[in-house]
Image (cartoon, rainbow, N blue to C red):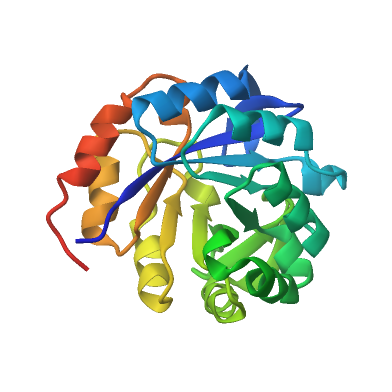
Length: 250
């Protein structure tokens, strides 16, 4: 039986936890260190820190904040946002990241995935994909926190990312992000069957049933959750129960 993980997500802007809908109307919510400790205590399997404005503002990561969070928790800690070079990967790992999630940097330089996985191992390198569906039905990859449509086919990019050495894919559906209507099961199912590496479903969790659905109906191995926790909609323990209660095996 595959262990299904719940990953608590902290979207960070101006060193504060923020959340919006479909990457718009972003509002400041809380202190990231306090939430990191809270979610670990409540049973999160992993924690991910996404600096959502680093690439857009073309600035470096908040290394001091990453270091503080890394020192505050013991569960696996993922860092993403502003990872543009191999040096950035090194800085994030030195600051306390167990894994590094690369999005815009890999779109600009796909070899970054290969170089990073060769140096640090595939298990520490994740490809993060922000994806939206066009009117024609094609799934397209977006860069710079969902602001730039690359025109790149999401399925082809997922395959290429895995071939280049990414050890996991974080698959975020922009159309569902923050809406709490459930993950996009169609997209998640297709990508998880397409690649041989673990896929993290992201975007849309609103209740425990959504966790159950994504694990029952797709081969995703992890589910990323944010606003459902930030706004105390469902206890993390209930999400864990839903994940453990799934009977399907892949």
